[in-house]
Image (cartoon, rainbow, N blue to C red; front, side, top):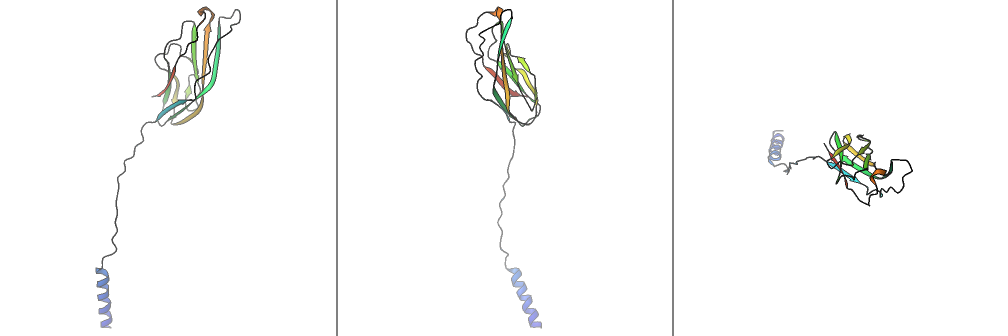
Length: 161
C-alpha cells in the first residue's frame, strides 16, 4: 500500500509539473464613431413652366409642376430644409415651392421669388429617412408684367440645423 501511495504521489507530481498547453491571445482596441449624416437628393428637373394663355379680365395666370421628388436622410434631431434661388425672379412674376414631408412639417407653398438667401420650407425633421416626397413648383405671371423670354433659375435645397 505504501508503494502504491508513493507511486501515485510521484505520478501526481510529474503530471502537475508538466506545463499545461499554452494559450495565445491577442487583443485589439477598436474606435467607433457615427458622425452627423445629412443627405438630400432630388429625382431630376421639373418640366418647363410655360404660361401661354391668360383668360380675358384675369390679372394673372399660373402653371404648376409636381413631377419631381426628393429623398432626405438624417441621423440628427430637429433638422430643416431650406431653399434658395440663384437670382431673383423678374418683376411681375412669382416662383413658389411646395415640399411634402412625412418626417417633418412642410411650410406649404412658399414664395421663393426673391430667396437669394435660404428660407425654411420644411422644419422639425426627425431622425431617419423620408423618401419619395413631392416637390411642387408654381409659376405665376401677372398680365401687367408683359412677356418674358425663356429663362431659368436654380433652386437649391439644403438640409441644416
